[in-house]
Length: 273
Image 1 (cartoon, one colour):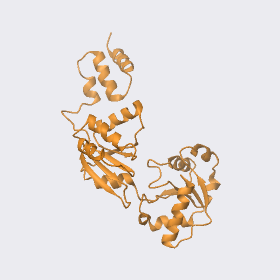
Image 2: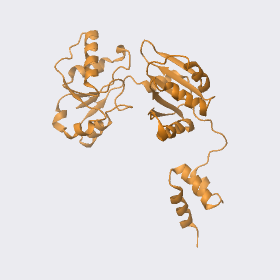
Image 3: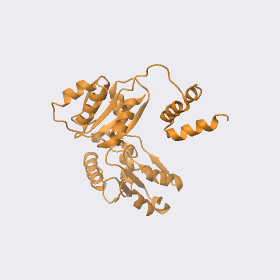
Image 4: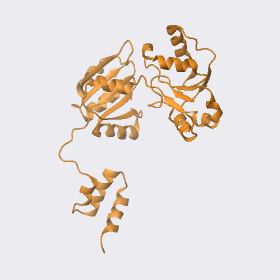
């Protein structure tokens, strides 16, 4: 059987008794980084008077998961197998999903324990009353892909949650300030750790505050949704409009993600000869 175990994102006391028991019973532990996991188990062992020795550790991360999966069979899971990422919940902006998918496809029993998660913790901390959100993980460092993803964040009609490193937080705040200076932003630093801190203000005010300080720690950023103005249009509303086919094709392509040329041809095909 496989069991995915969430690990503390900062405070060691956030590990559950159930997680400790599963880790103690584990014979094989797949790890995002074996060094990080061994260090964590040493700390947990000292704190809880537990012995985590005599475990088999295997690396399983985004760069080797395909190769590792090819070495597995059902016999591998006849023992107590655990997967842990470096911190937090596996599969959430961390490796592990392909291992779960392998178990599903091969009818291997598996379980996922609940536990520490930076996204939900920051969401609860933010004070936003919105009941839906989108998670974007880390934005790309630069280029068109970053600009495109940032545009998606700012145009999202739900709360947008993302991670950012201390090296790029100011850059992100500057980008938000340039595009939406009055948009409300929530920031959470080092959740559950000794230097945990939160901020909530406009993008402009946060940029002006943070450009004066030495930014440290890992950050969760939550962006207020784009305010809806006017009425919402759906695809049926657009297709029923009596407008030029080229304009209609552009609108439909914008809504669906199809190419304008493809949509335009579909419209022409429906026009009676």
